[in-house]
Structure formats: C-alpha cells, structure tokens
Length: 393
Image (cartoon, rainbow, N blue to C red; front, side, top):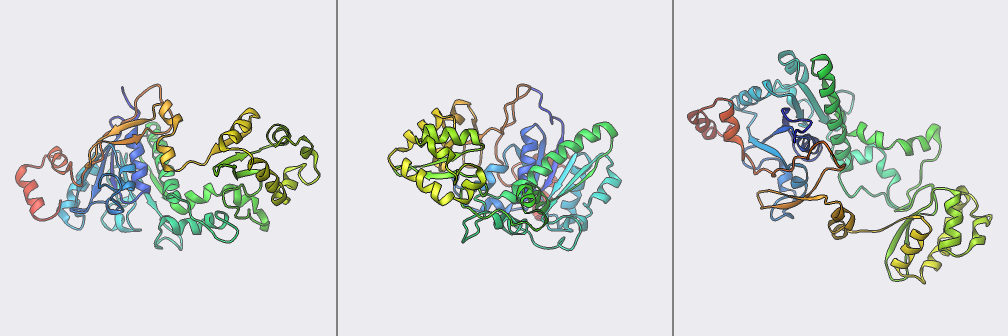
C-alpha cells in the first residue's frame, strides 16, 4: 500500500533520542531515512546498554526502518559524500552540538541557498540563538530547566520522569514540524528551516502547571503519583497488597463513589468533602477512609466495584505487565522486526490507519548500508575501497 511519505528522503545527522525518534516516525510513514553514524562505534546510544539480545534498549526503540551510513565528517571526502546525498534529499535533520553543522557548511542558510526545496530541521537543547544556545543539554537537565522536576515527585524529593520526556517532546515537535513543512512546500515549492529546542518543547507540555502558578500564585505541589489538585485521584492500596489507581473528575462521580464503592452515601455531603477544593484540603482524612474500605477487599474486588460504578481506574502495571497487556494483544499491536540481534518484538505506531500499513523494517547494524548508498551515488568499487582505507567511511 502507498504510504504518505513514500518517495521522501531524509538524511539525518543524529544520535541519542530526540532526532532518532523524530526520523523513525518519518520512516514509519514510508520515508527513506539515511542515518549518518561515526565509523566503528556509530551512534553512541548503541552502547547505552545491551538489554535486547546484546543491542541497546534506547537504540532499538528509535532506529528501525533506517539505513546506516558511516561517515567521518572531519574528512573532506566523507563530507563530499554527505553533500551529494543532501543534494537529492527532501529533509535534513541534525542534533549535533550547537554550531557544528554550520561549521561543516551544513547550516540551513547555506544549504537552502543551494537547494531551495530542502527542509532543514535543527534539534538542540535551547535553540539556535539566545544566551543558553551553547549550553550543554541532556534530558534530565532540560527537565530541571523546564520546571518539570519542581512539580514531579514527593513533597520531600523531586523526581525525574522514568523516560526521556524532554527528548521525546523535542522529537515529536520536530516530527510534526517536518510534516507541516512538507505540506507547506507542496503549496509554495520552497523548503524551510525548523529550529526545535528541547526546552521550548517541554515548556509547552508544562502549560497547565505554569498557568496554575500564573501571576505569582503558588505552583502545584509535588504529590507523588496522586494528582496535585484533584482528589481522590491517584494510587490506593488494596487489602491483598495490590495497588489501584483511580480518578474522580466531578461531583456526580464523587456521589457515585461514596454510594457504590465506599458504601457510605452520607459521606457525599460531609462538609469536609462536598467539593473538590475541600476534598483536596482534607485529603489525609479522606485517604484514611478510602484505605480502610479497600483494606477489606482484594485488588480485583476494588476494580470490580469501581468498574460497576463507572469510576475511572487502572492497575499499576510494571514493564512485564505492559509487555503482556491484554488490550495491546487484543488489538494486535505487536510486530516482529529484524535487528543485528535477530527478530525482536516492536510496537506499532500509535493510531490505526485504514489507508496504509506502517513501515516496520529492520534496525540496522553500524554502516550496514554504506556500500549500497555509495554505489547509488555512482561511486565505483575502487573509490569505495579508498574511502574505507582512509577511514572516511
């Protein structure tokens, strides 16, 4: 089936998570993604761990369906190969150190002067200008700068996200920005420059706590896994040692919760709890009541009562539980993809599509496609051998 980005070529100078996550999603939609890696070791994310049959967990997640080309961009011969690739590409993505691409003649202004239809997407910690431009930016540091840590964790200790949320945010905005730029080019015939920063991406996702603290108001308190301002909304222990997550959104649900889950209808009009603001103020007293009720029930019984009352709830899954989640199984969300470690399971991109099938091809070994790409550029075997001997590829 024809995919939306069939025929689109993306060249990516990428490492770690943000840019690879962006380009993998472009590949999911059919784009040809040529991943430029350092000769030998490749993307340093390949060495983060060896949890997937010897391959790194981060790497296998964000690098399927790509071609790996090794180039030592410090060598003019390798840079010439890259310039040839870019001349026929639709998109260039890079998340090198600030200014590194421009110093190699790969800045947006220089490239678009030669290739007006080219879309250039730069992903960085803080953006192409401003006082923080040259500051090193890793995911945890951006979580801190964006205020994420200030509202995440317990009252005593801030906590980082369990995944690379700043990288993911930047990768998502780069991905959607490129899709928009492709649509815009279809109207104007011209490419564009997309400047995505991790800080701005995560700051957008911090919109609710920012507005909650508008004009100097107190920010949402850190409240562990509970909601900072709505109660009851969070984890509660059951009598068998399990944990149930539940959430109430309005006063109708509060009344039903009292009647059908707690079996204490009079509690709905208790002056301590008769509005969300009062429940939030008196959450310790209300938690004690809920915990006492749930202590006499097993996890399945608590969930059964909540479901019968149509109160939103969830079990607190671990990673094993997510791998085996019955909903993902029932909706057939898993596929097998190739990798240097053999076939591994991979989750389909979110969102079913009736018009096309997502591309789910193999994760490449370092430099796996180098020779084929060089041949496609018209390089002969002697030229390829010379590049290898010089360490340029």
